[in-house]
Amino acid sequence: MKLEIEFVKFNPTQNMTILVRTQHPINEYAYIASKMMSYDHVYAEQVGFIEEPIHHGAAAHLQMAGGEFCGNACMALAALIASERGIVHNDWMNIELEASGTEQFIACQVKKIKEQYVCQVSMPIPNKIEKKTLNYEGDDLDIAIVRYHDFLHIVIEVEQFDLTMRNKAQGLAKLLGVVLGANLIGVLLFKSDSHELAPLIYVPPLDSMIWERGCGSGTASLGAYLSWIRQAAIAVPIRQPGGTIHVTADCYQDEVTNLRIEGSVEIVAQGKAYIHI
Image (cartoon, rainbow, N blue to C red; front, side, top):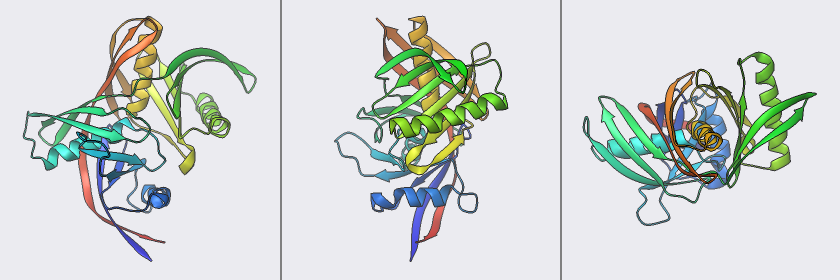
């Protein structure tokens, strides 16, 4: 049997993202995503599915293949909707989305600049942020844990993104995926002196582990951590291999109260893909 899949491919800070437009049973999402992400297919770092919204006021529902939340995929979907609604150069458009991994509406502001879409996105507020010292492979790691409803990010401040640290990050992500049963584990290696981020994202339901070139949700978690640790509002450009994502966050009495990211998106391809099942 051959599945015919309509898709759009996006470039949000080189975190290549596929959104599927055709409707499929949700139990096929993981299989479709793993095929489309592969090098011998459409090739991307993540796949989301565009569904009809559940609540009035939302333009669409974004369901990621692993059930996780993804900020860059939200930007991509907002850019697509703005494009189809006829947004013109230098114009702004407000779009609200539903998304997997959060019960909050995701408020998006999209501005078209030539063939790019600059997106500002409200991000889910973490349930809790805490600092811990973790003994892992014989070393004490000072980490910050940014917890959400069904996913978490680990922030580790480092001096270098060396191979030893990257291997430790991958092992830690795998271990936490087994122990916690979360839909997504992110390990965020951060150079605080230069505001550089190396984001590792592990999605246990898909067994997908990728050093992303630009991570929207990771940038948001890092911004939440920086605001929490400083107990102050922050506005920081976070440099990543694929470009820069800006984050703003506010903190009041140990609680993050506002969290937004801004990045750019390009629509790079659309068409039909074929999967044999």
